[in-house]
Image (cartoon, rainbow, N blue to C red; front, side):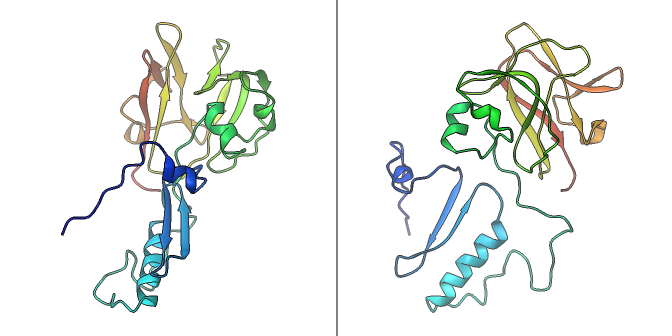
Length: 218
């Protein structure tokens, strides 16, 4: 049996849903009613359960379909929804109405240069800035050279890997990377992390994706 594949190149379906998130999951029951939706990565167990409920309500036999998590199993203590993909450029952030930037000053104006102060809010899935930064259309730009990492960006996450797209206007820039305020140990470091004087660093010499963290478990 062949199944049709819909390609939404002109974002017509995206726009009809008023969509702001990728990926987005919408589940309709047999009568065409929207019964479940989920935005971002993660939520796989909840999504599968919603599908099972919809099939059961439609009179389908799902007894031979094993759920992702057996009854009686429990999630690990402190488990959260996996951190979604994060944007730092104002084009996406303004459109998503405050979803990613913690500090309200980010929204003062597009292209604004602001001296941020870290307020220690630490909200999962949102970034917080300290130092001199300018919000641009496709990213956030650090505007001064510092020797001891006085300026930084903080991002609480719940995931096994962390990757970031970075570039530098000079030939090469060094970015110090820490997890929970400490250098990343070699066994947990991403492929682009190296070490210098006890610091875990990433050398940014081209516009590309850099692998920062590779954890064994959540």
